[in-house]
Length: 265
Image 1 (cartoon, helix red, strand yellow):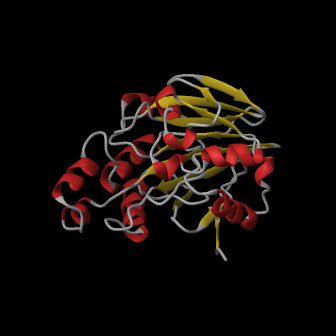
Image 2 (cartoon, one colour):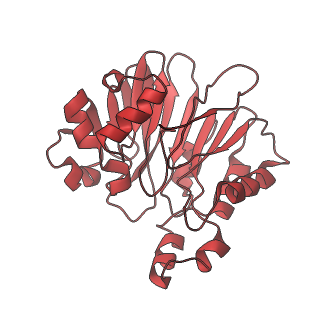
């Protein structure tokens, strides 16, 4: 997790010698610095898959593709983003499967106030390990629930605490937008879904896109831990942060190891 929140999102996925980025909501200088902390050369990334056109997810994708030779994949609606205006985009649709390097990427439509937003499930063709990545979703749709069956790792939005949102600094219209079915997933809804989605094979739960004003890592983690306490889950639960690189989340083996938090210089 290279950073997740309203100021920028980017997730590095690696399968053997294949690397992709899910979203690129940081400028190239910031992104290069975060990749440097984990000894990853930007040129070694094959492609960037963009969930939707909001700036905190697409801001640096076009510039990074031009600078480092990445391919960019996005839906037709996302491809209309101003940040991708001068970028050749490989258009993808919801429900589509893309084979790239050593991985298979499957898209799923997501309920968000964006133009054709999607989430992804990435599968390693070598090991069969599957990671679901779903954030900026107002609710968990049936399509998302179906896509999240049999995962080894789940990156799931846990954006806000309901009470903190109601009593926080946002005007009423913004509170309503965030809490609506096409807004952002609350701690309560995220925890309820994760509890039902847990299988014995799930090794990592990563909470993404936490609000800086209406949530805290401690509150989000407490909600999730309480929800999965009596399930089959025995893996790690981690809250992604806006300005901290967290990882790696290795899949396989008998015991999931806790990820490292990297300080940014």
